[in-house]
Length: 187
Image (cartoon, rainbow, N blue to C red; front, side, top):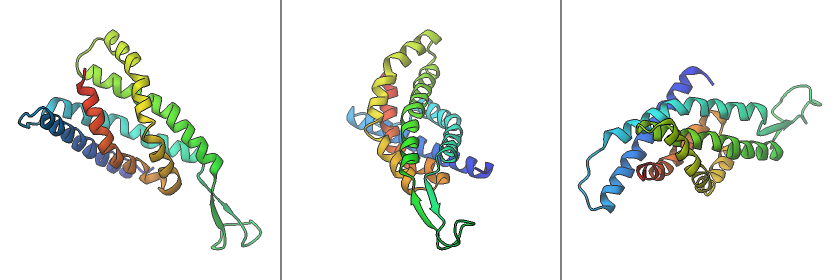
């Protein structure tokens, strides 16, 4: 992915992350019948985390697509010598399944641990306390994530060009971010 596109996508994802945190704060104030004022510390935490975590996630999506191309072409036009307008583009279901598997296991595991550890560290917890929180929260958060993200990932892998996948996930992540903001505020 070109550097400019990486920066633009990261900034878009960061704006959506900030919006989700503000919406979560608004929802929390509403539920607790309190007047709403933005708490800048958790907002800053979410913004910094997104700025740091988004570029590796963009590169992860590029890696998955390079390693497991989602579509193949059947060269029916000229005996397979070169791509032509008569080529048929078909979904490679096996590669799509592999991408989904890697993304929702290894990718989800790394992202979940990074999120929990970063939020705990941002709150000033000791390394031991961060480790305990990661051990306590990783599996429950991943299980909750699996209720949403496999569908989003499958949609992305089948219908969305690789250079737009992170932003599509960030749009869905606007709502997931509300959940994460509320989750991060629990401790």
